[in-house]
Length: 270
Image (cartoon, rainbow, N blue to C red; front, side, top):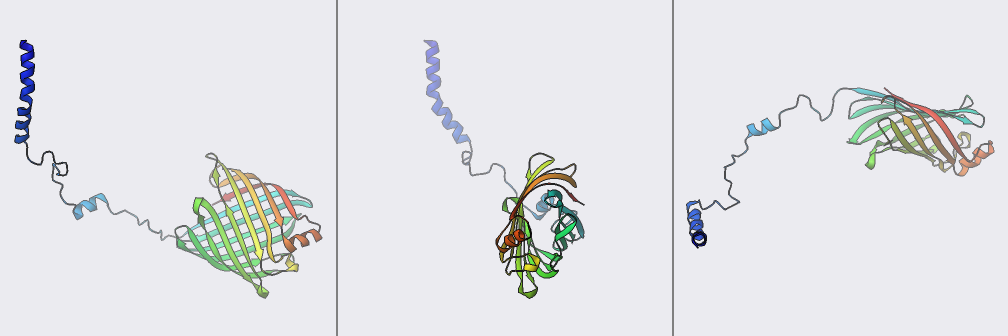
């Protein structure tokens, strides 16, 4: 009974003890919105300590830089001998202004079937895109021709590398060249690269083998191994299809309307 009386008296005394504790605490003790320790206002000295001035201005590097890239140097077994194709570019300049040099071409059985050289001025129009304008010179077997060139080079969403260039040439000829590629990293050294290229012209040019409209469409897939970032041999497959008058002229010269090529090549830059 004594133990029960002690427990009962303790329970009856709890409300009085709680009231006494509440009266002894400050009025804002249970107010969660009231800071317990005052926070001083942020000063300019605090901001300077949190965000110190960097040693270099990273907005845009003023120094001139350069790069040479042999995007494609490849060989395949053609019907009339060994085929070779190349595609390369080089630039020199800053992050904003650059001078571009681009070249591409194809040779079969030691004879040049197509070759071109472009000299372009490029200026950055966004963090991911450069607008270019300049000249293009074609050395086709039929006859050489010059073009004015203007277009865009850049990185589209999902990291697709895009080159789209329009051309205005002699005798009212005009055209468009479009290329897109994507690099899929399979491992630290193996890279799979799908490529799509298309070429269109506004007027027929039998001497140069160009038809009106879509001329050629090339889809390729190349797998390369990077011994280091600057040197990578590759093996690939390329499908080239001719359209319209270009396909007709190709057949008249004994060629197919489409070609499948197993290629071996090299990609390098410095």
